[in-house]
Length: 152
Length: 356
Image 1 (cartoon, each protein chain N blue to C red):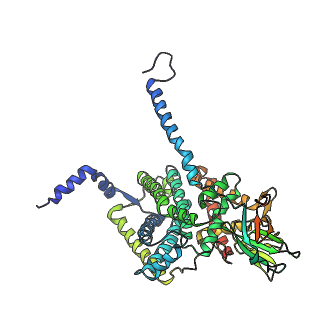
Image 2: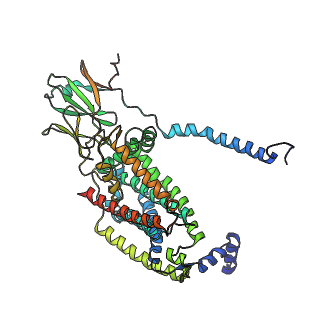
Image 3: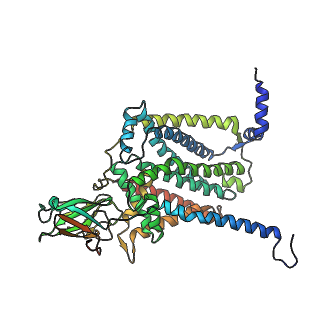
């Protein structure tokens, strides 16, 4: 029934109250479900490597290490310091390989090339390889995300 | 106690209201004309879907969706279990056949313009089924967990990243995190054996219901001329022809599966460089090649972004094709016909190019 001068019937009013309430209850479940489905993801801030494993590297030599669940690449510079990159292509995330005879990083997925400084030189990669910072501290070789200071 | 079969049948009929369904089946007619051959592509897809379900359940009895177990468990299926290698081969080949027939079905409907009013929703559910079939293939490709499937999945799940803001969420949803890891394998397995089957059955039910509701389409020129097209009874005449085609297809599928069983590579190493020759399944090759030809950067945006947006526009346009092609007998209808041919040539040329 409709009360005089009302915009809608009582039935319509009750329907929207019930419907709105059901909708609100359903919506309150969305947030926890979404949070569960998208897992908390964090890249490591730093990884600690054993310096002894890398101290014997010649200048220009490149070795692998594990940067979380991705490969990392570390190169010995002529002055004895280390330069590190995340070893995945900036194009579509494939793992890159170091080709010592060509002195280039190579991504086999779409024929992407980076020079020995990690700069994209040929193929589809839009950006250079992601640089990481590294420092030798006593027995350890630390690789860190740029801007993350040493933890004391 | 003797069961009165007649009474039992009557009881079932009474409770489940089966008579109208049988009546419908015997009364249903299929038009006969120069394009009727394409009607059979629909039921062929159902045959391959049925084979996928049966072989998929068999494989799932032994497959282990974990980093440590995936490759080994497939190895066990292929070497220890009786005819396991054949079951896997049939599952793999039947997926190829199914998607090929979905594409043929789609092209046949495009070229005969059967999507025209009142069958727009049938076309749209069909497009959804094509996408779901391709996602089935994409998720299934990772399950052997070798270097090639790992790299192909990394590339595939990274593509949404080209789209700002939402892309990152899509990628993390697909991967179960920022990288392709064991969580991705678990997730893909869940999609492949649980979520996608639910989705495909739901859409398929609507699709088949719509086909029954509207009946089979007749050629456009006959419709315009209001010509009475001769028809074939669905039961038993049409079914008989379908069964013959099914048996032929089954023979072809088994022969190919026997001769060209898929191999199994070494288990994937998350840290290893991508192997050479990373390729998706054949039905993604033309998209793969499309992504490849775009330059790294195009002005302020990446070439990948442009490519992904163009592909999305094409998919949306094809989805709404019945509404775009609203005067199928006119000039625009002709043009859309040619666009279909051009699209087909494009897909074939780019697929071959990607293999060179």
